[in-house]
Amino acid sequence: MSEKILIVEDEITLQETLAYNLKRQGYEVETAADGTTALQIARQSHPDLIVLDIMLPGMDGFEVCRLLRQEMSTPILMLTAKDDEIDRVVGLEVGADDYMTKPFSMRELIARIKAMLRRVRMIKEELEKTEPSLFPPGQKLIFDNLIIDTYRHEVRLNDQILIVKPKEYELLLFLAQHRGQVLSREYILERVWGWDYIGDSRTVDVHVRWLREKIESDPANPSRIVTVRGAGYRFEG
Ligand code: CA
Image (tube, rainbow, N blue to C red):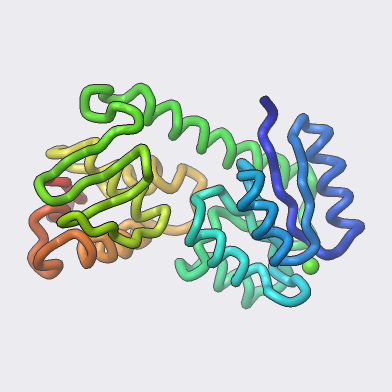
């Protein structure tokens, strides 16, 4: 089954060019010219990747990205036209996975898309094959009062569902899968965010801090995700 890409772009010529080129690469393509339509399509058809322009009529791409991120972890590649947009995309606030600056070459865009989709496939395969005893598909990882439900994509603490961002969930799951093992920031970044991610290892620190605030009884003195000085992080359970 071919992978599905949603293109969100209001400049029709560019939208059509993108759609044409991606279809030629064998992808199934859907298009939207505004944010509201994009959200509707994304909810209905669960695309494998979203190409999202920032300058859109009504709701801009930042807002669309933020709303998408609350609901799904679909990779998002943002199209930017201005320097100040790049700053916001690169910053953690938006939650896009990658970006391209207009004007861009179609070859480069396709290469990025392929890399992003390959990464998602790799992570999925990895999750399916690694340590089956520790990670049976669609089951729960239980650490005392902390439960990671991989079937429902939920984290529960004391039977309360925690609101976690998709990347926080992926990070927690990754740490939990490697319980007891020291993992360097670089390794975590590479495995959870992908080797071609544009951020640096502080991204990992920020997400660890957010997770600690949610799952640690005393976030200042963490006992679940511990810092190993000069080495990285270790999940204790
Ligand atoms: Ca536009």
